Amino acid sequence: MALYTKKKNKGGNPLLISVTVLGSSGPIRFVVNEEQLVAAVIDTALKSYAREGRLPVLGSDLNGFLLYCPEVESDALSPWERIGSVGERKFSLCKKPKSDGMEGNNGRRSSEAIYRKGTSGIWKAWIRKSLTLKISSH
Image (cartoon, rainbow, N blue to C red; front, side, top):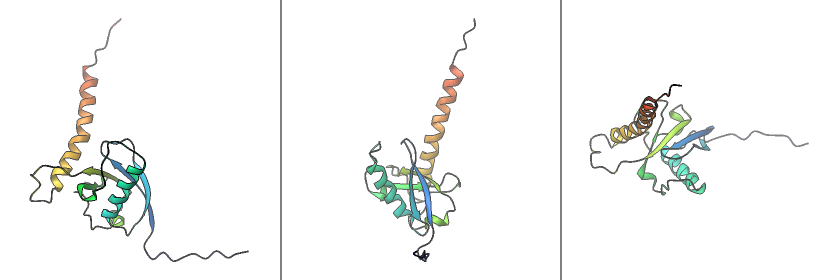
């Protein structure tokens, strides 16, 4: 009978995280170390996304994306921040905007506004469509 010895985990605890890519169907789930940097998580998410053959095609340049934590009202996470420091396990990934109006706050507000506008636009369209449905009388 072999004895089970627990290995010491020098790099932190593993976390199962969920990353939703804006415009894609369903989240991507994978395990990361809580000490991993946000940049490494973005890279892993892009590789998993491409491996699964999801659409729209995003590419592999991790510098062109921002990671948000929708549960916590904040700006995009810094690429040098540790993923475990956020305290959440659900994230959203979206492309950085191509506009020139990104000066001042490293583009954080611009991309956050685009993310918020994209999700609220869907709800507004659904509400507008629901209100315009005509109820037929018998």
